[in-house]
Length: 254
Ligand code: IPE
Ligand code: IPE
Ligand code: MG
Image (cartoon, rainbow, N blue to C red; front, side):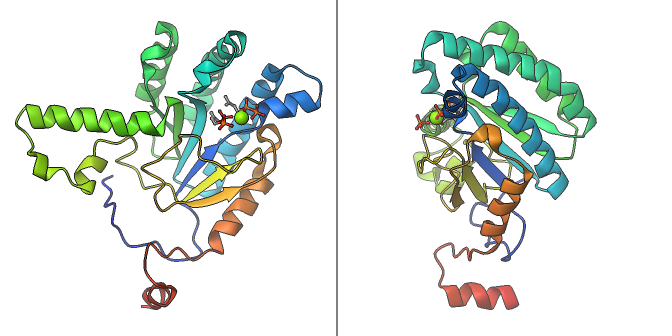
């Protein structure tokens, strides 16, 4: 699938093709119950499973989940270790079901800092599901939006040095092809749970025209009804992409 980044806006009132979620609030969910933060992460993994299934049932094409940011390494070591463990065990326990339900799994982020075992499972999970044509599930792990822009800039400079490109060829469209998710539709709907209203270095480039939706619900509590609310809010918005409201209304009726 190749994507024109200046593609005209999709018609109003449609389902988002691509939903991107910052799954936030695991720690507070656990703290409210006097449990260790890690209990919140375990419940969060269950919520992720629910939402993957709900997106699949709704016919959403791509779901991108922010699982671990490049800044999350700075958390206390025991929490990082438990998150890495949970990542590996969830991958091992879920891959068969994901494959059976025709989900294509992909990872974005810098895999360099992960253990060899985890990296091996990530590669194997992508390989096993590569031909599936149901929901595309993208897991952002050791991902940062600034890292993504830097890796694209590095690769485009390599192409220039190799003589494949001239500096003058570096347009928005060209650079886009070096960014993560370049072959997928841009995120239509961004959801952040946990009450914070910030992007936290998620898909900085890709979310230039994404609709933002924030909810106080903590991620471990997030369910299909919450997703329904977010999709309804999305459907009620007019996306203008720089045009006037009248232009958009006219093109929708053309
Ligand atoms: C999100 O929940 C999970 C990760 C960042 C890995 P948090 O752990 O950030 O939960 P809060 O924000 O502390 O409640
Ligand atoms: C963003 O949540 C990263 C993930 C959900 C993986 P954080 O909890 O790390 O974000 P901040 O620190 O509140 O901005
Ligand atoms: Mg948080």
